[in-house]
Length: 464
Ligand SMILES: [Zn+2]
Image (cartoon, rainbow, N blue to C red; front, side):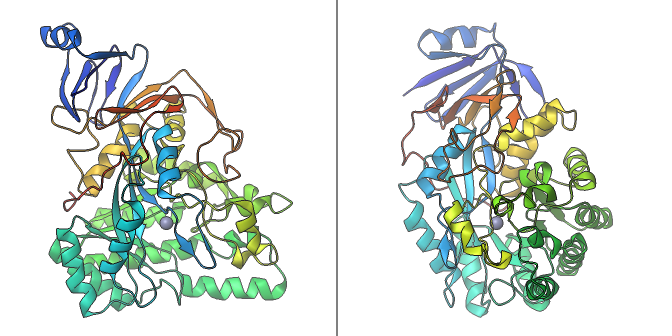
């Protein structure tokens, strides 16, 4: 069994920070102990000692929203489970939760089986699944209960994409109520897709076909309206609801208002909504297409500020990436019409480092950074305290982070399988030095040293 002692660093958990050594035996943390203790001295005698002096030692990041090799008719996102999870490891993310998508007419159970086949033996970090729902019927309800027993405890629904993923309010309500009964969580893509489709078609008819129209036809009010509606549905269903990829200040206000009423609603945002904006979509020569995702990136000024405040104060619980990369030749499917641009931005590699920028800018404390990137994600999705925590008994998913070693993001150097970066040239103040997955060093000083099959499927319990 490998024994490792990470010494000299500042151990940062969501709850507190302390100067301590993290002692790892096999796959598990056996102690977080004072450097001068006999325990640490004895342990170091026959352990590999990693010197983390001047660095932060944090729990591995958990990205609750990725789409590896995901079909988006007529194409497929460009990262496989293998390439996407290796990129994740480079950026200090040791767990991803990906979305299993049923085929048209296919069952949720079948979707998870298919995704097991895709991911099994092909993940460099640990992974779990949510399931997307469509064609909900009595079988779906029975299968939801079976999936909870299999450790797949969250179900994604949509008020967007009519004709593809859209569910009517009565279906959403019935799934929420059933999920509440079996302890599962409904995740909502909340935008009013019916009205958005009117605006999109009108824009295209006028000849407004450039990428920026992707955002201009998905106004903030239609995100806020959908968040309000699903919050009220969850209220009546007596069930919790989690809003994925919240992108705007008005939508955040609806979450906060519902929370004040006592609705069990929480929300995630993504780096693209904190760092990108309308001006990116306006970039010439179709570069704007690189920033097309849904919900859209928005007018910067008031939204960025509001979302950072929401992360600091709790209206936003987590940061995920909605990682869904497409190369430029794929984006070019929409050269003549923004409606045909594949939706998604790459991001799984940079989230932990990007959100640290929020610490340096004074938006977040160190502890809150760890909480939104890892600890709260583990709690929401039934992985805590095995994940998201540096403490005895937890999985030894540990990241050594150097706050004084900047990283400049570039497609030339990133590890994601995509030929551009949405953040090309962004310089971040700190970066990941070493990543451990269950006690095994998988990234060391920019080099991947894990295996493409080192990640394990995580059977999740119901969240807290
Ligand atoms: Zn997504």
